Length: 230
Image 1 (spheres, rainbow, N blue to C red):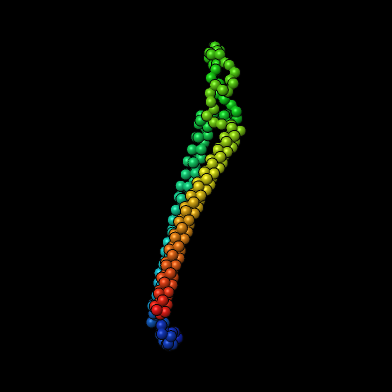
Image 2: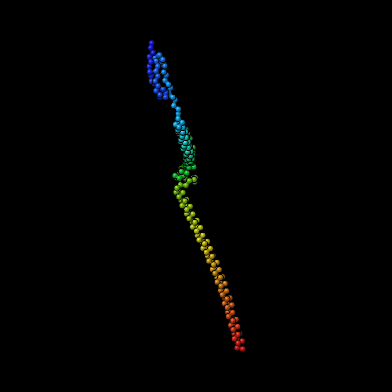
């Protein structure tokens, strides 16, 4: 059996072409060569890492901002709830006051109603009447709350009293001021008169001194002339 020679051309892993000659007797089992695993470059890895870290920081910042906003909103809602609680308490107090017997009596008195001391009661279930009902005149008990007309009359009377008291005070002040002015004018007149008397007395004294001096001078002149003639 003759050997058959065959020529084959193939490329190695470096891309170089090789020609091999083999016979049919020399068969070689061919197996696929695994591809080379590419290595990751350093720059893209750092870029991906920086991107992940930056995204994490941005996410933390956004989360922190959201938490702060929610905290502010919660605080505002708590304040609003507190204010509403105070308002509810005030309204409940007003309702309780409006339901109180004193307020009911006050409103009844403003409507002109008066308590009736002569009351009768029906005892159930027998229907027995206890007491004798009588019509109330409204003068048995003095009303604790005045009607609008009574309030208006009392206000006008108080205003009149205040005006009267103010007028009396004004007159008293005017009278006192007049008396003080009169006393001041009298004192000033007395002081002026006293000063005038002192001025007149001083003028008389000055005039007397002047006359005495003039007489003395005239006498000296007369004596001098007599001596000259002698």
